Length: 171
Ligand SMILES: CC(C)(COP(=O)(O)OP(=O)(O)OC[C@H]1O[C@@H](n2cnc3c(N)ncnc32)[C@H](O)[C@@H]1OP(=O)(O)O)[C@@H](O)C(=O)NCCC(=O)NCCS
Image 1 (cartoon, helix red, strand yellow):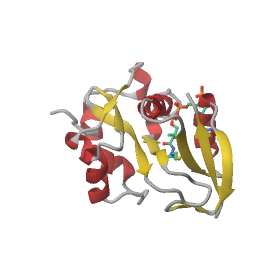
Image 2 (cartoon, helix red, strand yellow):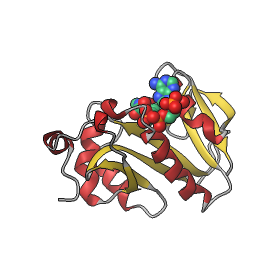
Image 3 (cartoon, rainbow, N blue to C red):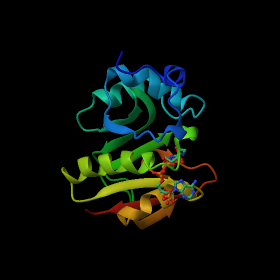
Image 4 (tube, protein in one colour):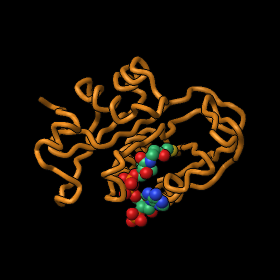
């Protein structure tokens, strides 16, 4: 099976302490269940929206796997119109790594893969983040994202606490 899931990964005895390296690759239909399991409880993506994102040629959905099991994922989103200070373009649309696998470079690898995909198609990559999300802001710093605007909403994204940042980076 291509994506055995986290329970099977645990059964194999593969743990974050085993010095394993995650592989990042485009997501396919076989990964939908595992991605949904990672998102469970975060309430940010319906199953139908996830299925549509994976099938959409204007978006790049990637997974990080260890021995075929998904331990993290990320996606892009394409906006075809401007919304105030937030222009049309390709946006990094969220990245999540299972808590046990964090601080091992997986989030950075998922972001690098998405940025290379965006920069092959557009001169700028966009990203919005909750102003309180220090982990995400630090994660994206190495690609020299600069703040373009701050506000309560960009396109359809609103922010718990009320303040988000609109960020932009060039290759
Ligand atoms: C943000 C997230 C994806 C980072 O994933 P990760 O695999 O731990 O990230 P990496 O190991 O690649 O970290 C790369 C760099 O990001 C920064 N970073 C990551 N987590 C951090 C944290 N909790 N606090 C401060 N900086 C952090 C560090 O600079 C880190 O480099 P270092 O480990 O050498 O110090 C992960 O914490 C997560 O899934 N969070 C919940 C979902 C979320 O908030 N997603 C972002 C929405 S925009």
